[in-house]
Amino acid sequence: MTTWGWILLAILIVILIIFIIIWWIFYNRKQEMIFNIFKRLEVENQEYLNNKYLKNTLQEIDVKLKLNPNEHAYSDEIINVYLTKKQKQSKLSSKFFIPFEKGINVGYDNGKKNIENNLIPFQLGHLVVTNHRLLIINEDITTTWDLNLIKNIELSIFQIKNEIKQGIYLFMEDKCYIMIINNLDLAYLIYRMWKK
Image 1 (cartoon, rainbow, N blue to C red):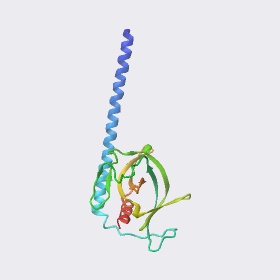
Image 2: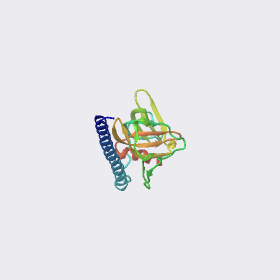
Image 3: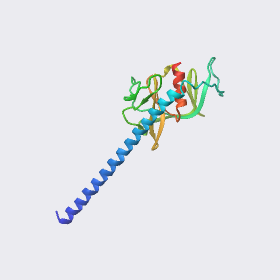
């Protein structure tokens, strides 16, 4: 190989090393950001449990639905729901989670955020929370889940369309759904109705 060949090879190796260093720095910063978001979610969850959970009174709302006898609606908010891929049927919680006594655990799934390619869009619509069921309603379809079919609920974060969003895992009998929920009030309303 000529001198110019060795110089070119050295330049390519230096560029590759610089690229690897930049990638490593970016990856570590992203992991640190995700860790900090999870920590903030844990702190917010604990503060909610300490300050709001028991103080929030249930307020019935009117909905344009025919409810069953003794059924009352407490929330009507727009949400987006996803179904997780390759969910084990026996799985009832994340692989890693922080338990909160008398509250919703913070789930880390496999230790990382759940990214979009692991999610199947399920339904976008109005979530109506009643004391008996969850209803997701849009122009095309209404999905109804009885609260007694819920096996577990966990708070978590998810990456969807390159944005990090807060939501909950909703573990049903043989599936795991993800609801993008921006506030803990709705998450705890679902939890409260489920635990009744």
